[in-house]
Length: 529
Image 1: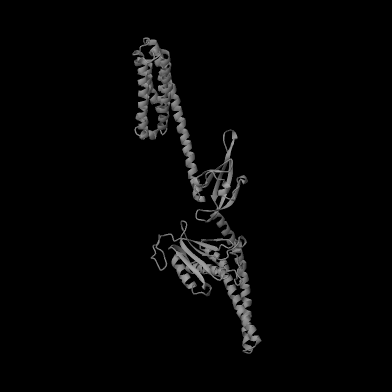
Image 2 (image 1 turned 90 degrees about the vertical axis):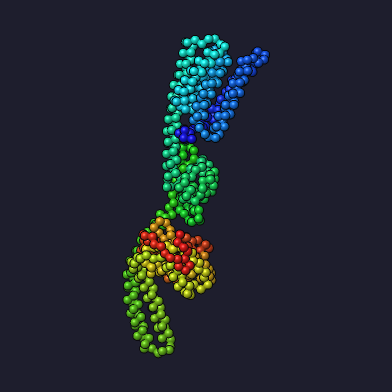
């Protein structure tokens, strides 16, 4: 087996040479027997011996074939085949007039076969055996006696054949090894690429997809080979050169794939198809959107801080003046009722300004190790008693995960997301909220709040985190803006997946605590791991 490992093509060459030997012996010797039978009118001693040579060749070839099927001692079988080829040539030369035999070329053929099987070593061994077989076969034949010049000429021919055949065989082996190295390097490069690589034929059908591409797209090559690329990636267009397409991964997650195409050309510039390099841009686009939102919110925050201060002073004056006037009017009457309305609305406006100030100048997070699942459980228990939770089914799928965060601010995030989901479901008179948590990518933990409400369209998703943008009749549009600012202050990120009629899923990612800490299971918690 070790020898075969050194030359992976030896087994294949042995199989083909076995087949070639059977065909050669059958055609040449069989034809000779037929012609001799027709000329002499019947069998003679020489023909009987040829029959034996043919039968012996078949039997030994069958034995070699059995040994090859067992894949054992492959190199020993190669040496045996060289000996068999020379022995056949010697036997045929002995039975066909020795030095005048028309089958002396079988010795040279045996030398070439030796070079094919074992390269230079096989050619040298075959040439030595050919000279010996030639001398024995011609000397013991019934033909003309062997003379030294003739023996020298034929022996020299065998040696020259060995030199030429071994040179060509070694060149072939060197070229094959170089080609194998280049092919192996090419395969290693393609398999080691972190980007996806697909090749398409001239009709746009998929012919190859590298491992990174399979993992990235969640598709196995065996399932898509031969299919048109536009069927696998519906928005893909090979004629655009580059672009971006939406794709659903193996678990149904939304992905954004950026791709570039270039033509595959064969010899003389003949077009073979198209190569496509693609990369997952989902995280990159999310980061870009987060940065744009953060920059936009930072600008709005600066304006908001000044505006809130300017509003708060007049509000305090108005509230104080109305309180004085209220004390001077009768306890009952239209004037007192109107003043109560002014005071109530002034207080509501003051709370709105306070929230606006909190949004514009959030307190820096006080980071500490927090068990995220426990924090979610506590917040969910409190939310269950809120009027907004009436008629809602809240499902908890929580796995322990440690985060470095401000527990108070993260509770605000969870509460605002729960309240947002409840308000969306109130339009339908009830629904289902699913809260999940657990480890995410390396260095992050995540939790999500999902609802089966009416969902949102693309235009709403673009503005969902902007201050004062709301789709609710009684909302003021600061809840999700505060959520984004808190998550951003923690160095985390938040994503939204929604479509009309498909509900909404808000997923928050927070930095994980650097050192791993084991947490005992609490009520409703699954065991870690």
